[in-house]
Image (spheres, rainbow, N blue to C red):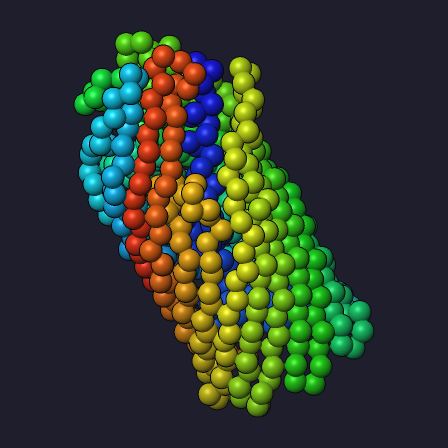
Length: 427
């Protein structure tokens, strides 16, 4: 029972790296205006649409509100390439089942909201809501990847209170405090000892609230703005219920229904960027993000019968891109941008739950001025995933006579399209 609980929690926590539309498990779709230029000018731009990237962005804004949504459509495939299972006694066989898993990454919608108001001539307050780590992957019950994952559902909601000030005529500063809610639902298959026998299944549901912070600054000159920000890592502690069902014969004692918890950390993020007003109509943007994925070094599992640390060994990465805004006329602004985003997942530990790879993001967008106080943003994005490899071994019932080992090997390919719509209103 002790080992069953550890394995169930271990499988569940791998959801935290379910593939989103940035590297690892980060969903960077936090601004429709930003989507149009591939999120390359946000840390140096002003207004509530840039609050996620820089709390100083509202220091010079009017009383403003933003509401946006991003519809995400993913076309990905995960194919078996020689996966095996080794039963007690050393008998090794191919992992049976569906060899090609079509569209395991589910389509979804990511919403954002922000509002800000000036307080006197030098100060501003803001409130924003985002879904920075939010996605779902699903495999069929007979998929070759079932011993890594069947269903992986992660929902987060980040609520941030921001204070900003104009420290000088050219320097703005900001600070934010975030409360972040995370909820996870996961399942994966457990092998019974007889080849061809129906699998057992493990399930976990857990949730919890945790807190973080961010700081930022912007330096405004005649035609050039520099921006820098830092967002802290957040250590999440999910509490919930673990169940292992359907194990038969000598494995029946591994069936379990118990409370448990798992902790993991989101990465810190440091962003640096510039926005140059090259002409009265054309603005050029550039942004670099250093993302501290090494914070996700391990998953720590706790329960009444056992405590265990499960290594993850994610790598810190640097992302970057360039973009532009072009004012066609007072009623219409066009945007475009491109961003490169390498995966933090290590090649030697990549799981079917985390079929992540390096990617390029291309974005185009526009803003239409509907009235003196209302603007509508729209954007289209395309994400091209580089081919990557699943390479993940799992030991079930370790340390017992029933020890069974799966060695999953596979190929991942994919692409995604994103439609983003939003409104910004001053009042």
